Length: 320
Image (cartoon, rainbow, N blue to C red; front, top):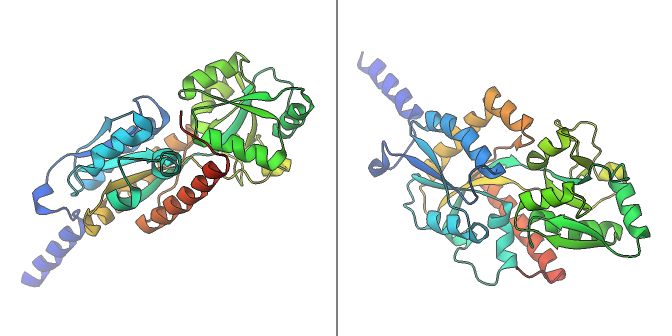
């Protein structure tokens, strides 16, 4: 009987997240560096309830927008390193800001512990509905025939859409004029009105306008087609190579968070993203669930930070 009780106890312990004793039975806060209602926030809210069930904790989403992610990052890095606060961010704040700004209030290697990649967001090249170009290759060819550069919008200087434009110019010799906006909404609005001619953006953020016939999809910056847009060719299929963009979303914890806590959150997230209901909801919205190990996220973050810093330096890109 004693041996049987010990076995049951061991199983229960194995199923219990390994939180520090002082952090038991508390709420976990997911700090999102963007406003409520945006694509990053939408993913965080999609996974939060199920993640909480897996962790045996209440998981709340806390929006801390501003300063290109620095406000949210600073909040998290100053929080207790016990699993009670996590940072959910896109690639910009995690792997672009370091090359874009001379001074940042946070340092990724010093202030954060990688937990897991959560999602991949393929960049999609779009134009207004009645643009004559049927795909990206034709759009580029048309731009080269114009006497003046074709205005091409981005969601801000140094953003993934801006860096995708720079890669496109390098890869094709296209004559494009970068037009930065303060976020996706005004850029999409002006593109639908043909005030600008093109835009790169996350599939998730552009899908409603494409499905509604207000924007035309030209090509995917991906090695494979997207399940939500199976008829849209990749840029590589159109002979355009070198557009290496992925606006990934990931979870980070404050530095010095115990490895057993990071591991517990990682396992809970994997289970959450494997849930068919969660997975289908994300895919239908245009976002690809993509959990990773903490080590894989660390490698990805460092690789992208180096890549984008080199491009920013080569193009002499300065923040607005």
